[in-house]
Image 1 (cartoon, rainbow, N blue to C red):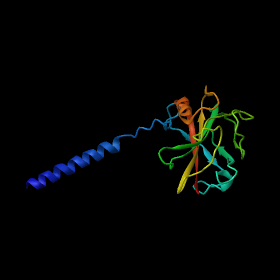
Image 2: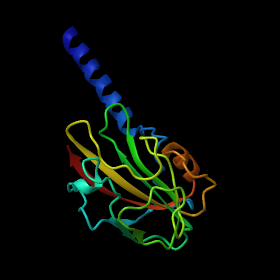
Image 3: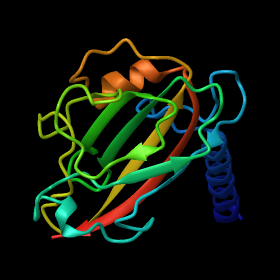
Image 4: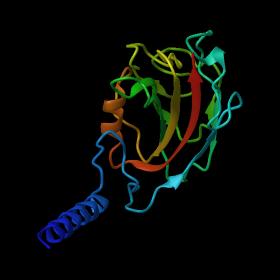
Length: 194
């Protein structure tokens, strides 16, 4: 009987722990919340590329095994109140940390996409500023995994403000500046294996 009581207590403890964990929201200060700047649910931006489909392999020309140029991107459904757009491309499968491949911000909200091979310069013709990636370079540096298949997320954010960031800002600086300004977001994921 003593064993049964101990087993029941143990099971109750596990059940209580599971309930507590289910209600606990993970704290991830590295990503904007799912609430827009006006307190409502964020709208979704549709983002695509002419060179790869969502979830498909990214072709070699857009990686370190090729010329390493940025892929063309297009998007739609940017909300009317947006003033600027920001883009982050990163690899959550990199060993040790999420590896940042591209940081771009203060794109005019009317921008409908990016051409292939965006120049690696601070300011883009027509608007937009590039930040520093984890290769310590300005602009886009494509997939270059040490091994295995990695996922690369191109995340686009519609913002209700122009950000007071100088060229060369990091992903963390951009995420901090975007807090409270995100109206909508969308993402496109591609994979690559060396």
